[in-house]
Length: 342
Image (cartoon, rainbow, N blue to C red; front, side, top):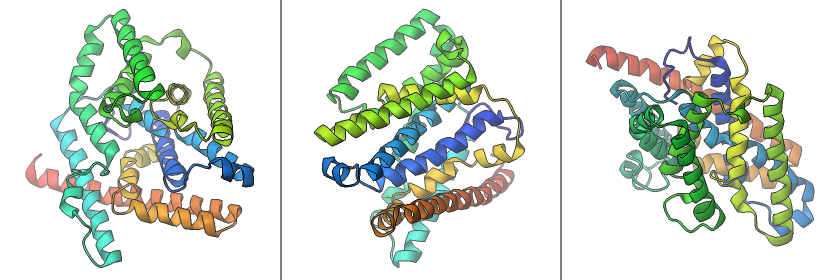
């Protein structure tokens, strides 16, 4: 994602590693409860260990999107036309590529190909559209951060998170926050990360291992609570919403844990700068069905050890291919910039 750190050699490798981890966790989330149904009471009664493992996997990985957004807030976005152009080019490049792959596999162009290319359908790259919206209003968010007092900043965070907690997460009585799948929810996560970075409140000053233990505690809590609620009452899905307070808490302390690691790695930075490409391939409207369908076929057709092995290899394969393809995209973009003087 675009931050103020544009040089891959000067980026903080600890946070770039978190960017990579977050994208891997996004792939795991999609391989878990996007490709597969959440275990209900009947499934838990028959396969309790398998169901528990699914809930545990979701507990670890559901923080991924929030972490990705908060990484942008941690450094702050500086809206620049050149960076916006590059981001849009990356999106179009992978949209065209995935559409072409679909044509080669299916022998025909996908339905509403142009509409999907422009992300005009609700299901097309929801994350990218929310992020673009946040990116465009980042100057306003930054202006608030720079001009507001700490007290005003805290009141805004309390007011928004309180409203979101009651009217969207707890009672699902809004149509515009969408369980965290929305630009306003991204903006408040951005501001939360800015607040943590600027003011270093006391709850961010724990030792590194304490941050990790809090994250693991959130994972354990989510796993046990959802397992019991699904087993007994067939409810509990709200604990996997991106605006769930516990998901945000887990994302916050995973972010803080990585922020206290200190190291430099050209290899990590080289991979991380292309991390968005992983989302743009496996979550493309036309290719997501293949990713999900393959996972689903293995889940129901293979033993659990074989399924875990195959799914892991698929995730690694898609991850690696996406990074390498994005390096081609970067080379093409640099050529276009040279020719057009963008």
